[in-house]
Amino acid sequence: MSEVAAPLVRIRGVHKSFGDVEVLKGIHLDVAPGEVVVVLGPSGSGKSTLLRCVNHLETIDRGAIWVDGEQIGYTLRGERLVRLPHRAIAAQRRKIGMVFQQFNLYPHMTALENVIEAPVGVHGESRTAALENARRLLDRVGLADKAGNYPRQLSGGQQQRVAIARALAIRPKLMLFDEPTSALDPELVGEVLATMRDLAGQGLTMIVVTHEIGFAREAADRAVFMDGGVVVEQGAPEDVLGTPRHPRLRSFLARFI
Amino acid sequence: MTATPDAGPHDVARAHRPFPTGKLLLWALVVVVAADFATAVARNPNFGWPVIGAYLFDATVLRGLSVSLSLTVVAMTLGIALGLLLAIARLSQDRLARGLSGLFIWFFRGTPLLVQLIFWYNLSTLFPELTLAIPFGPVLAHYDTNTVITPITAAIVGLALNEAAYMAEIIRGGLLSVDRGQAETAEAFGMTRLYALRRIILPQAMRAIVPPTGNQLISMIKATSLVSVIAMADLLYSVQSIYNRTFEIVPMLLVAVIWYLFVTSLLNVGQAYIERYYARGERKIAQAAS
Ligand SMILES: Nc1ncnc2c1ncn2[C@@H]1O[C@H](COP(=O)(O)OP(=O)(O)OP(=O)(O)O)[C@@H](O)[C@H]1O
Ligand SMILES: [Mg+2]
Image (cartoon, rainbow over all chains, first blue to last red; front, side, top):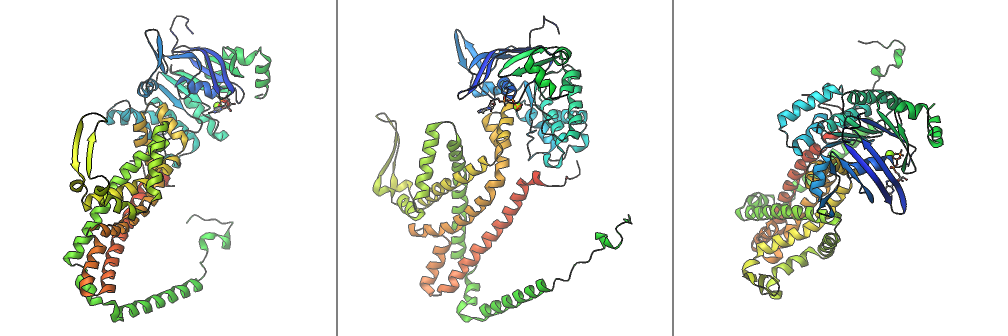
């Protein structure tokens, strides 16, 4: 990790409450370009919420988030910080790919149509170019022969790989994964993790929320442990996972042995 | 043949179907009763089959049919378009939009269509002049109500506004039936709300919207017969105008019944095609990839 490169993602002092419950209690996190950060933590610690704040699916109550030099959701007009209109926020999101726990493929479109939807409809790519790119991406996730299938005609692992291809098709600067393998049967987890490991090796900037300790160890540049709405410990995966210092991290990891 | 040696005589591929005696008897019974009824109706002179034959394609009847159909198409199209706007307003974050939409739906669903039609037709007695103006400012447009509200505009406005109220609730139900994750995914991909609605949400909502809309369309065709009260010559009005002269009441009503059933049957076929189109993602077996 180079210290000189400006971080692609800057998260500063982020607080977020749902009603009376404070879910994020001051998160600081930087992600360098090309870095793969795995976020670990017990259920309810705010991992999904943090990820959803990064692309403004949730608004934050305090602090600030920048992606690629732009503050997400707000802009400074002179001294005044103003909320961006919906259209401008939509434009910011177009640099960020997201993969969901429940895949969320568009069920009325084939795998191929799922992949080209945003490139053609939102990014203004030509249909021919988008189709060519989509076929290449489906091939890359090992599903070239399933291009014409509807999501219901695919296994969970195949659906999630289509969802990854769909997110890659917008040529994102940043990819967010929210427990991409948690809804999968154990024998299907491997194929999705292999795809993600492949992406990590190719210099894509990724924030991955997962319970797959093996993936964190092998593919991540940094592991971040969250608990109770704060980052408790972070560092190189071998340190964080190998010699955990914080007792809560130790008891969390004990469950995976 | 691929053998299943272990199954032997138990191999289900060798299974025979039991002979459906009961089912065949029921079929025979239904056919006999239906044939009996059909001949009774066909032989009965009171039905006046020759009269029906003579008037089925009568110019007055066909003109009435085309009035009914055009009214249905125009009122339904306007009703669906306005209903979509009302449904979106009803689901929006904006309290004013939600409130206004709710008020509209409450009023137009809560009053009889017949009353609404008569009300529109007699609008000039309430507002003799229609003026479009900025409050306390200049007048932008000015009309005599009687020139604007003819029987045909009264019929269209009355049917369309009433329809919009029902369609709004049908469309709202359809939109709510779509998994919340779909809207969120569209949002995460940087789609604008309108684009997400058009490409992601509505196509999925259509599965829930189409069947009740088919119902509405069929009701609408029959509801157009109400416009005869405001002197519109629809299908029912035309056959009435004929039997008022000839006193062939039952045969003339049957002419109308035959046409209503014919149009409804066509709509059923159309609806089946549309439903199959929107269910394409539900197919269990993939087609060969192209
Ligand atoms: N929309 C919401 N409204 C109210 N509370 C919410 C909402 N979303 C999340 N929460 C609460 O915020 C807390 C953190 O949720 P979050 O989904 O971020 O946890 P997580 O770390 O992703 O957990 P998991 O590992 O189970 O996915 C939980 O207590 C949850 O109940
Ligand atoms: Mg979560």
